[in-house]
Image (spheres, rainbow, N blue to C red):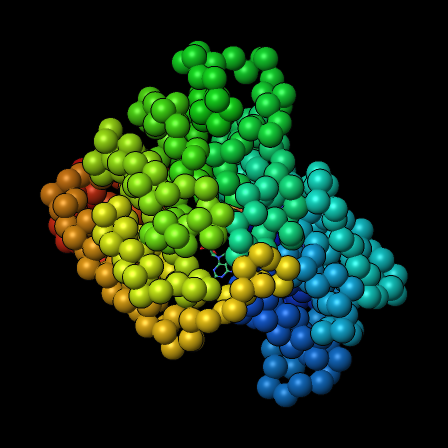
Length: 446
Ligand code: 5AD
Ligand code: SF4
C-alpha cells in the first residue's frame, strides 16, 4: 500500500512540474514514506528522515556526500498520523509531515516549503476521502490499484485502523475507469489493494453503479468488480490483497473459477493457529473456519496458492499456542508465509497486556516457523515439477542476470533461460524442471 501511495505522489509531483532523478544523491526533494505497523518499521523511517535532515544541514559524517543535493525533506504515511505533532520532537527541522489519507496535498506543501515555510503538519481525519489516489506515472506492465482504504476490523494488536482511518471503498466506476486507462497504456497485470480487500463495497454498497450489471448473476460487490475488470481488453491478470477468511464466499470461489484473468492466489493472513489467541486478537474466526476457507479454495483447484502472515510471541502465547500455529501452517499447506515478531503498538488493545514472551523466544519461534516453511515450500513446489505454467516475464533474474524470471498465476517466481528473445510483460509457457522452497526453475516451451 505504501509503494502504491509513493507512486501516486511521484506522479502528482511530476504533473506539478518536478523532475524525477535517477538516484537519491541527486534529489533536492526527498520524501520518506513511513510505516508504523511494527516499532522497527517506524524507527527505520524516522531514522532515515533524520539522516536526510542532517545531510541537508551539513551535519553528519559519511552520509553527507550521499545526499549532497537535498534541500527539502518530507515525511509521509502512517508514522506521521501516529505521532501527530510529536513528529517534530523527533525531527525538529523536518520541512513537512503528512498523514496517509492526505498525500494529495504534497505538491502544494512543496510549493509552500519552496516559499520558505517549514514544519508543516497535515493530518487527515478518519473518514477523509483522499485526492490523487488515481495518479499513475510511467508504469511498467504491472500496477497497483487501491480499491479499499482503511480498516474497521480492530484486531487487538493492530495500529492500522488508527492511522489509515475508517474503511472506505472507492466507487466501482472510478476503479474500472482507472484500470481501463492503465490497460490502454499497456498494463497487463493489476493488483487491487485493501487492508481487507474482500470487504470491498460492503460498507458502501451504493457505490456499485447500476450501469455495471452482473452478467454472471453476482450479488456481492467484490465478485462484481472482478467481473467488470475481467472484461477489460488488454488486461491479462487480476490479483488482490489482503484477505480475511470471512470474505471467502461461494461467489468469490465462483469468480475465481469463472474468470481466467483472476489469478489463483490469495494472501490470507491467519496470525495464529490457536483458537484462544485468535479470540484474544479479535480475529473473528476459529482455526476450523480458517482451514475451511483454505479447503474451499483448494477444492476447485488443488494448485491454488495460499500465502499468509503469522505473528509469534503475542502476549500470553504459550508453547501449546505456538505449536497450534505450527500445526495449522502444516494443515493449511501454505505456499509462502511471512512471520512477524509481536511488537506492541501504542493505543492498541493488546498494548495494555504485558509483552511477556521474551525476545529470544520470539526469535526462536520465528526461526522454527521459517524452517518449517522452507521444507513445506519445497514440497509444495515439487508437486509442480513437470507441469507447464504460464509466466508473465518480469526481466533478468536478480541473482543471475543470465537467467530471466517471471511469475505464474499463483505468484510463484519462475526462473528460466532466455532461449528466445523475450519482452518484459509478455507471457511465456515454461515447463518446470526443478523445485526450490521459494522458486521454480524451468525451460521455455515454444
Ligand atoms: N506486531 C507484529 N506484527 C504485526 N502485524 C500487524 N500488527 C503487528 C504487530 N503489532 C503483522 C500482521 C499483519 C502484517 C501486515 O503485519 O501479521 O498481517
Ligand atoms: Fe489490522 Fe486486523 Fe485491519 Fe488487518 S484486518 S489491518 S490486522 S485491524
